[in-house]
Length: 356
Image (cartoon, one colour):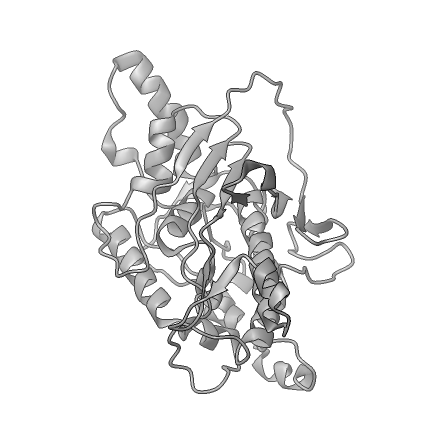
C-alpha cells in the first residue's frame, strides 16, 4: 500500500510459495488453501488486511473511522480514500503465459526483429498439481467434479498470469468484499526480473481490453508495469514445498504445507476460505452494503458469493470474452468445496450438514 506521501508507504501483505494442493486434500469445509503460489497467497493476505480496515467502521469512535483506509459513501458501502494506492511486487514473472512466452518473445525479436506469432500468446493455462510450471487448457468443460478429483483426476488451478489478469478486470477484492466496497485495482506491478516487458504487459493487462464491455465500476485496469534489472545469482534446485504468509498487524509468520493446504499439524490457515468467510459474516448486517438484494444473511459461502450480483455479472462477461477471443475456458473447482457455513457460535453442528 502506498499513500501519496512516499514517507507513509507500508507493506501490508507478503508471502512465498510455488506449489498447489494435491487433489486428495481438497476440502468441502473451506479449510485448505488450494493455491500456495506467492502471488495468490499475498492476495489472500491482502484480503485479511481489507477486512481489518472495514472492522474499524464497527467502532463507535470516529477516530477509528479516520484510521481506516475506507470512507463510507452516502449511497451505501465504502470506497478507498483518495490518498490510498496499492502496488504488487513479484520476484519473477508470474507462472503461465507471462513467464512462458516472455522468454520466447524476447528470443523471437532478437533473432527475427519481429514479435512472436499471436496464436501462441495469451492462452489460459493451469498449474500442475503438487508441482511447478503450467500446461495449456485442453478442455471446454469449465467445472471439475468432486468425485473425479477424489478418484485421481488432476486438480486444475488457473495460472497466476490468468488470475492477475482477472484482478485487473474484476478487482483484487473478490466477490465477498464486493458487498461492501468498490473494486480495488492495482496501481502498479513491479517484477524482480523481466525478459520482455511488452509481452508481460499484454499477458497481465491487455489481453481483453478490446473485448470486454464492462459496466461501471468495473473496468479494464492498466497498472503501471516495471522491472528491476538484477544480476544476482538465482539458486537452482527444487523449490520448498511450503508457503509463508504475513499480514500487517500479525505478530508472527504462518507456514503452510503447500501439498495439503494446511499447517504441518493439520491446522487450517488463517487465509482459508472459511476463515475469510467468517470475517465477512461478522461484518454483514452491521456495515453498510452496496445495493445488496440479500434478504438476511446467507448461510453458505457459495450463496454469499453469488449474491454479489454486479461482480458475478462482470465475471460472466470476462469468461465469455475469453472464449470469444479463443483464449480458452476458465476452469472452476468442484462446486462442493464452496458449500459450507462460516464458523460461528452455535453453528458448528450445522456445518456438518454440508459435508459431502
